[in-house]
Image 1 (tube, helix red, strand yellow):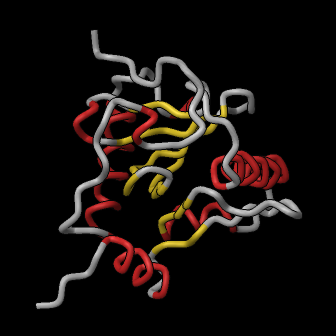
Image 2 (tube, rainbow, N blue to C red; image 1 turned 120 degrees about the horizontal axis):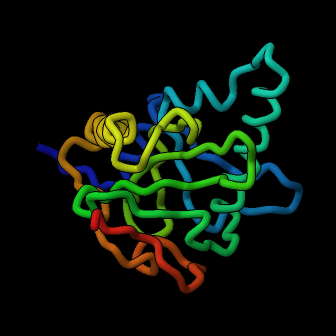
Image 3 (spheres, rainbow, N blue to C red; image 1 turned 90 degrees about the horizontal axis):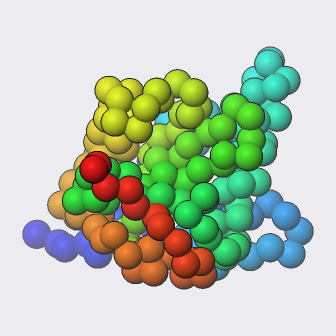
Length: 175
């Protein structure tokens, strides 16, 4: 049996069209963090939409995600660890946009993020709702489908998952 490192597995999943690297689109921007998007989410991000507002929102979301890949400063309004912390599921938030969107994913290691799901915040209800739990479960299922034998990076310390993080509260306990 041949053992593949997680890096080898990522390369394999990219080759097989299961993961897609997000490369900053702005001229002169180079990736300093690795950001990979799952197959379904990639299809949603890159699709053409007849609804011009939705088309605009998807372009705006891609630009927001480029901020991560290009090494922009990360604050707690941008990135949050979701409850329970032991699952290692994080959200990238775009609260300034209307309607706000959330990208749900997990970290392979510091500065390597796998985006698995996205949703409009208005569709998720309260942060402990059934819809939130479903989107977190789907993100974890995408992870398991990609990396069956690997665990995501699990920590409550933002500095262990991303470089360039501002001081702040990135995790909210249940209580």
